[in-house]
Each structure stands twice: as structure tokens, then as C-alpha cells.
Image 1 (tube, rainbow, N blue to C red):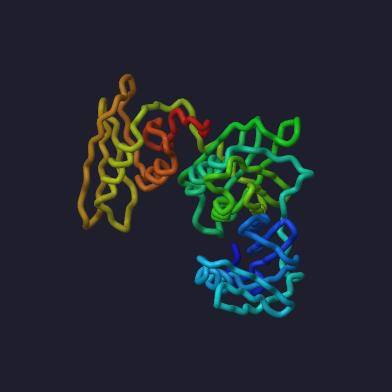
Image 2: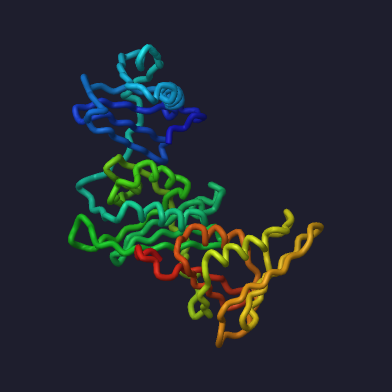
Length: 347
């Protein structure tokens, strides 16, 4: 989260704070705040409380070189000393009072609790559809909403749309939580820092200008983007013809359609004819490809459309079910991929 190349010197640093409870580390780039804690234990001993601000890159390089040894950290107003065996290092420090405060999780505000393993899955199924360019403000972001006892994440770049939902029961208040916020999609990567295989649950909180996530390891705070998210519901058509397909074999076929390509086009023609799908691609100056894929589409009319196989491959890679529902109404109608029978309740 600390930004090595930022002009604001203080943001290149980490705040280390020793308390009677353990060691705390804080980093922020003013958009994302990360707070980690290592409680007092056999491996973490605090002899005297204190706080110090040191350069994040220099601290990481120093610790990495002696990671296999026991480390002692001692700080004064001017220096931070790190000792490990016969090795000694001195790092310059800055005034800890100048370090920006991050929006910590509030016990006085409502929050929900879900299985820790499901939050990274929701993000993976959604964030890849956000716009790459930060200038596209809200489309560069991701909508995170709680409504009807369901958490929903939405991302779109105008050409593709991802919606992931998960029901929840646990919450900190008896009344229904109804909140929404738009956050930078790329900032969600910090959440992985506080989710590990031995973490069972994660708390999620919507604040006025921040989206907060908390686990036993620490907290992540992400500043909201200003504005109203596009009415994404209009981009989800209903009443489309649906077919059930094996996810892995569909990915295999889509990858074949991208074997011959050029820089001028990313699109592939797709025709539905009775019991087969026919993918046809043409790359100027490179060649052509035609791939047939058999499937059961009984009772539905023939149709044709144009798809971007790369978009579909990314979506299919973000879900883990064996089968997907492929829905389309033909030319000029959006194509929908839905995962079938997800045991976690993700949709």
C-alpha cells in the first residue's frame, strides 16, 4: 500500500507501533489504508511501547536479508535500529505524528460477517471487468452493495459487465443493512493481505466515505469514489435462450479461436446451428480459424453473434464450477455466462 514513487515522502513509509498487545504496522497511499497486527506471543515480544516511521522499501529489504533470524527493533527520535545475530542496521526515521491516520473499523457502526474464503472469490469474479483507465472514474471502480440480506459486487467497462452476489445472515444489528459504495477495483488487492487459509470469517463495513474489511490479521480501509454508479441492471437482458456447457471444454475451445489473431481485431463470429457451435475468426495477414463445438441446444432457433473470446476466457477463469449457463438472444444481444450450482451460494 505504501507508494515508493509518491512525491509525498511520508507515503513511502510504514508506521511501526509497539504496544502492550503486540506490534502494529500501518501503510497508506491516501486511497487504501492497511493495518496489520502481530499479537504478543512466543515469537513477538514488546519490551517498551513506542512508534516510529521508516521507509517501507528499505525496511523490507533489510528484513528480507535476515528473515531467517530473530530480529530486534529499537527506535529513537532519529533512527531505527535493526539487529539480527551479528548484523546491525540503522534506518533514518520521520516524525510519527506526521503519518496520515487511516479510517479504522468502527464498533459503533453496523457490519456483516461472511466466510473469509468467499470475499476474494467475489472480487476475482468481478474486478476483472472494471475499466483499466483511472480517468473513467466510476467504471474504473467497483460497486459494493448490501441489500435484501445479500452482498453484491458489480464492475463494468462499458463492454462487459460482472455481477457477483452472496447471501449473508450474520450482521451486527437486528435491522436490515442497506448500503452501497463505489471503490477503486485495483485497491481490492490489499484485502488479500489480511485473508489467509486459517482465517474463518471476515467483517465488512460500509462507512460514509470508506469501505472497511477486518479479519484477525488486520484491517483494510478503501476510500470511496464520488458519484453514482451506472444503472447496470439495464445491461442484463432477460428471456434469453439458455444452454448448459462444460466450463473447461468451453475455455479450451475459446483459446483455440485466439490462436490466430492480429492487432486489428479481438472478435470472433459465433453461429449456433442445431447441435453445434461454430467459431470463426479472421486475422488480416495472419490467417483464419474455424472451430466446431458440439452441445445440446434442442428446441432453440439458430442464431449468430460476435464475441470477444478473451473477455469470456477471463470470466470463465474467475469461476470454479464444472458447468456454466450460456445465454444469448443472437446478434446485438448481450451474452451471459452464469455458473451452475455453486456450493458456496455465490451467483
